[in-house]
Amino acid sequence: MTMTMGPRVLTLLAMLTLMLGAAAQAADAPAGERPIALETPGGAVHGTLRLPAGAEKMPVVLIVAGSGPTDRDGNSAMIPGRNDSLKLLAEALAQAGFASVRYDKRGIAASRAAAPEEAQLRFDTYVEDAAAWIATLKADPRFTSVAVIGHSEGALIGMLAAQRAGAAAYVSLAGAAEGPAAVLRKQFAGKLPPPLAADNERILGALEQGRTVAEVPPALAALYRPSMQPYLISWMKYVPTEQIARLRMPVLIVQGSTDIQVDAAQARALKAARPDAALVLIPDMNHVLKEVPLDSQHPLASYGDPSLPLHPQLAGSVTAFLRTAFAGGKAQTR
Image 1 (cartoon, rainbow, N blue to C red):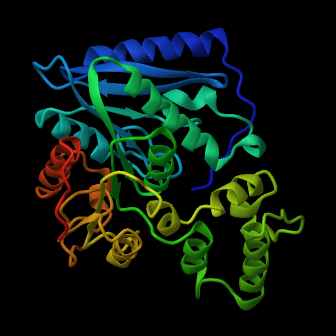
Image 2 (image 1 turned 120 degrees about the vertical axis):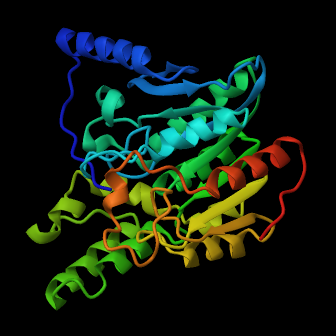
């Protein structure tokens, strides 16, 4: 989830490139899609508004993408090809009568110029942007209600923003239940030589307590470099199980059984923290929301294949929950 950001100066040429790119995107976009931007003091955060056909007033869903250089469509610059998972989700929502907004977070794709210096970046920056999107959509007379769908790390961003800005409903897609430090410990468990494992624990322990660390071994510098530590500290103060319990809105937790990044135990822990939430466990759905069997010989192939549709159970589960939540009812758990 690390991001490398140096000084960014938006030159005239860069502005021209951005405008031409936005125009081309609008020209190539499916019917009902149009560019939208959130203006902030640090620059514009660019996104896509998808509207269903034939409706004048409708509910709208804010879709928050996952960690690292993952763009509004669910594609990561770190992985070859595209999966278009969040773009496909927006299309499914439109077919069900819901508008949606998906966006590139600061420093990503079309919102690259809005990135602060890495040492100034905080997790709350992403949360504040998502909350501002919610407030903007709530004030738009076209929309009757606003829900939030967060994917992967975007699940925590969306969860916090939904709480702060008062969304009508919240959906966690492949969201972790454990705090960031616990996740990092699991990712490194058994993979580091003993001296480096001790350094990792020393650094993690300090960051959890809100303290930066001056001595970082070169082998761990990619994650724990000094300019990245303030962001990690700001991120580690949030534990998803604690935050989901504070939501005062209908909640849906969705998890796939063949997700190699987030397992079903995380979804069950979120459910335990919020017992009245709806829980949907989808067989053979992976982290990018595609149908991939457990015995697949190439589990990562779907991460770069936009021709694969969303798992057939996903859209129905999400839209059924949203209809119930927007109608003021209580979704059934299963």
